[in-house]
Length: 517
Image (cartoon, rainbow, N blue to C red):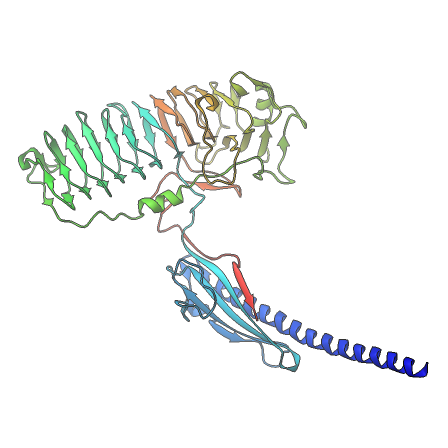
């Protein structure tokens, strides 16, 4: 019995000694790991603290450093970067160099080694995305039309971006696109008099038939040809095509040059003059294919569909939400009570409101909007929007600084990065009057199948099918609902635009990948 007891006691003692030793080793390794992460965090702090309004001040970045002498455990770190688009595997991957991040940098890699007691060490490679570019990309965008959009005898103020398919310009003698026209994945056909005060950038063929064509800037087809087969062309800049430029039966003014990667076709030089009437207009053939900045694909990415769904966060503890369960908001009078009450911005949730044959009716009537308000219509019902009354803002407020009214018919699918594919029977209904003095955003995930005269300032954001404007003036204006909707701008280039070079941001984004050894 004594022998058995001795053996048991010796076994237990050995196990205890082993456990104590293991715990000591684990403690040393844990200390080393914590020290390594501390070095990583110091490197991150060094980078972030050196970011200024104009970019990174590399002179203020400690690209490598050690922990303070005398401390224990200790760390040492080194920062590297790469301009490659693909995420690197680690600190010593191909293309990763000891270079301070620049405007072209895509990834930052930090290697940090921590040393604990008894020389225990842990090394980590931490990889972070690096961004330098437009402050409003990708969620900042211009008025959005995923499907068809027409503006007949209408004036549209702001850059117009057609993301998918071809575009027909037919704004007539009394209308215009007051800005640039971008046709990202299609061509342009002129079916009535077409006036664009800025430039035109299209991927495919630009074709004018028997109508006046007036453009203040350049006309560029990045991958197609340009056909100016009409009398009455007035272009303030260059005509530049990847394919041929055909001017058969064409006559007019081009204040820049004809530039083509291929050839001029059916061109009569005497029929084309500069703006001051002088001739000839230079013809440059064999030119490189057009390269524009930003590229059409960059604009396509920057104007990606914004997903607003039932799970989108609009409110906070300090932001009142009005819904049928908490206070009815289905009738005109009930909407007016919320819209006209001064105070903090408010969310009106119309989920649960009765739907008629045309869907849930949103009809604020005659109202002075006293604060920023978003009205939400559930994705499960159609929207019947009536802005036929006088919608005004408080006296003494300007349109640009006054309240915002956002009317959002939610997207049923928030995971596909595009608007839903809807049948014609699912399109929203929209009726508008002529007196709306409040910045108004209309977001319709399916789209609005209406032809109407619309005079409004704000944002139009819709997919699948588009609004057909026939008369009136739509003026794009920047709008936002922070942090859900950062600023939605009205231009691609220039002051306040998505690619405004004076409105850039530099940042180190969140940790993407980390390995330890």
